[in-house]
Each structure stands twice: as C-alpha cells, then as structure tokens.
Image (cartoon, rainbow, N blue to C red; front, side, top):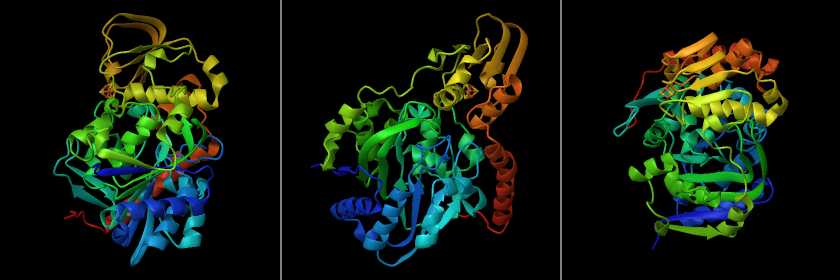
Length: 433
Ligand code: SF4
C-alpha cells in the first residue's frame, strides 16, 4: 500500500472556485483537515512578476485565492494567513506582489503580504545541514502552524530543468545566504532548508506551464493541470515524470530522497485525480526545455566551459542570462560582439581580441592572450551583476533593463533592505524548538 498520494486534477481555467473545490477534495483524502489551524503561511513562487517581461513564471493570484478560500472553508481556529516570499534578481518583493495581483488578495481577505527583505526574520539552527548550519527565514515561516507551498510548474536550467516544490525553498532565504554555495551544491542547500520549511500541503499551478528559457522571462503554454500532494518529494517526482523528466536524475529530488524526506520509488506513490499522467506526458513530450551545456547555446559568442561545471552556479546562471535575451529580445542575439567567453577555469590557450571571464574560477584561467579582458566576478556572479556588466561593458541591453526595474533594483531595493535591517534590530535571533 503506497504511503504517499499525489492528485493530478484537470483545471483548464484560472478559476479560484475550481481550485478550492479540487484542493478541498485532496485535503479530505489526505486527512489533514484538523491540522489547518493557527498561523498559516502560503509560500508561492514570485521570483519575478512583470506585465511585459516576466508574465508566465510566477504563481498566479487566482491559484492563491483558491488556496485562501480552501483554508477559510476547511480550517478551524485560523488566526492569520500570510503570503511569504523573497523575489529574485534583487528586485523588491513588494513590486512582485503588485504585478502579480496579490494586493487585491490582501484587500479582499485581509491576508498578510510578507516581503522577506523588509520583514522580521529569525535565525534557525539546522541539525542536518550539509551547506548551512543555520538559516535566516521570515519570522512568519518560523512561527507558522501550517505551511502551504504553491509552486509554479516550470522549467529552470539551474536545477536540472525542473522547478517545483523543493526548489521553492530557495525563496525562503535572503540574498547573501541565497547566493552562498549557489554553485554545484545548489541541490544540497535547497534540501538543507527543508529541515525548517517542509510544507504540509503543496498545490502547484500548472494551469499554464512556463518552459524553455530563463526562469523569469520564459514563455508558457496552456497545460490545464493542478497537482496536489502532502509530500514535497512525492509531488516533485510525479511532476517531473509528468514533464517527461527522470526525477532520479534531478539532483535536488535525489538529495531529498537520500535524506529520507519522501518516497524512494514510484511504488510508494499513488497517483489520483481526474487526469491521467499520460495525458500531460503526451502534451509535453516534444518540448525543448532549453537545458543543455552552456557552450551549446547558439550565438555570436564562442563559449568555453571549464571546470567545475556548476549547473546552479556560473554555467547555469550564464545560460539563464542567454535565455533571458533569447526569450524577450531575440534580435539582440545577432548584435552580440564576437568574443570568447570562459565559464569556469580553462587551462588551454585562449586567443581572441576580447575575452570575457564569467565567475571567479574563470578569473583563474592564466593562458589567455587578448587585447581586452572583461571580468565578471563572483562565485557565482548574480543575475543582477551579469545583466548590469553586460550592459555597461558591451552595451547589451537585457530585456530586464527598463527604467522602472532599474529604479526598483538599485533605488528601492536598498531602501527596503535598510527597512528590514532596522526592523530586525528590535528582534534577537531565536531557535525553533
Ligand atoms: S566561481 Fe563559478 S564555476 Fe567556480 S565554483 Fe563558483 S559557481 Fe562554480
């Protein structure tokens, strides 16, 4: 008898009532209704939301509205509901809440919108962390009684093409800790966070599926599916298989299985619902997820990938930047200057007029003969750093180079961080028992 259940429901429209109905059905089946009480946190994927350049890669507000209604319908003694997030790219989470339509949820249901960078945080110790011995999270997450993950079904070249429930936890931590060991160890740090933020319920927005490009700017298609489970590993295993990916080759799923967070085989998972998995597999079988070695990206750059190969670091982030340009400014690819880009340490002789060194390992490549050497430092460099450096050093405008986003990233974001720092002066770090 399988220990884990995953529902795959047909859900063709962004209709909150349908989402509430499907989720309530699953909750009754899981027998977790009595646990929906006290302080409830919903963690969506709002890595970025923007009406022009990031339209598909975030959890839609209708799904979160359906979840809120589910809580109100099924919960008892619910004290408060908070939506907690930390967006990516050094853009303010408040802006993502606004663009994604979450403010109306606050007005309509009185839920809290907690932007981690400007909220109270606590540092929690980890007993089994491989990368982190402790982590700062939003106080709302530390104090919650019930945690709901609402991931977006999408691809991500930084995490072996798949982004779901387990990957969502990177958005539970803030900038410095988020970038710490964001390299070949990304899967380990993701699963470290699970120790303190393991969801009780997962509802994935697969009504539109975002795929094939940059995790923020990629395009999407109708898939009409809602995936619901009470175990993050079982959930991600089923989603990966649904997308014709092998979950046992996805490092963070494998890591979670190895650490005992979920089933080790599909024999221990019962797939329920009204939509056969084969139906979705058929729809996604010929899609290009854009997940390949960075040196295979076709453009004017000659890209040489050295060592190490960091899927979650330099190679993955540079590939993600290339996809960002391809997703939204395809013509810019033709304007790329001829140059050689090294990602990772390269020992062979490199000769070109211009050589671009991406990341700290590339800086250690010594046998370079070039008139101009351009360096983008970091282990790894952030998306924001790459976008900025490619703009000022090569006049290459990524789609995210827009006045509103520049103001947001370089003006507003530091102010929000300052606010967060001031707010946290009042609180001492605490441990969750
Ligand atoms: S500098 Fe880049 S390639 Fe080197 S370890 Fe860091 S992320 Fe990996």
